[in-house]
Length: 329
Ligand code: DGY
Image (spheres, rainbow, N blue to C red):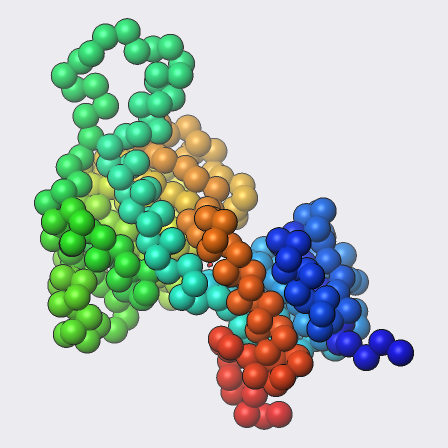
């Protein structure tokens, strides 16, 4: 008789992750990486004690009511705005995420996007590939200075601190930040970062990087009013979540040259990208790949798998989001 708990891996992962999980579970998976409708996902979750999810699977009250056997949703992401954590806690369902293992890789990407945006790298590549480069010109793709400029960071968690350290120590940038809570003096010194009010951040940043979690409170944290406070020469980089920026307002600000440029890895309603953004040349667009290096994606998959084994087999998850569920057991 098979006594292993049953789990679902909702999206394709590395084969070794499936092999590891099979040692402990009866595993249903999606190695073909099909896009399942919500009723499909719910049907496949019947009888499953755990799910290895990604940001694409919404785990909310409706799904939980339809999947009464579910005990754990292990997100393969540090962000967990796809989880209704209150509904999960109310039903005694644990959520886990994958912090730390992606911090430095994501900070690298944030910096890469900042550089590409400020120095107009993709825009100039498109120009070259289109065969339009026929002479040198003094102002050809002249962008914004990065070294020695003011780097603004909205959201100063682990990834924000990684970006601050890169800017301050690598590029001699003057780093200012705004966050719900201030860093300790020791961390501020390590990041060479100065805490400022949000308004000062908007007004002083030459490059503003968004690294805050998405929530009802951070919805449209950057909209028309905030964009109007920024310098006309400023660049905006969003590696956090779609919905933190009002994409329509941003496209208008880019079109009107209200700000100089933007670099975006995340979008409202992704994987769809607003056509107004696609029409702007002064925006660098990437498809939510900030944590995408092979070693980091392996580490994220392993941590999600370790959470499944940790909780469902040993009763001890590694990175619980709602540990109050554990106390109730
Ligand atoms: C995360 O981990 O939250 C990244 O956005 C990858 O989805």
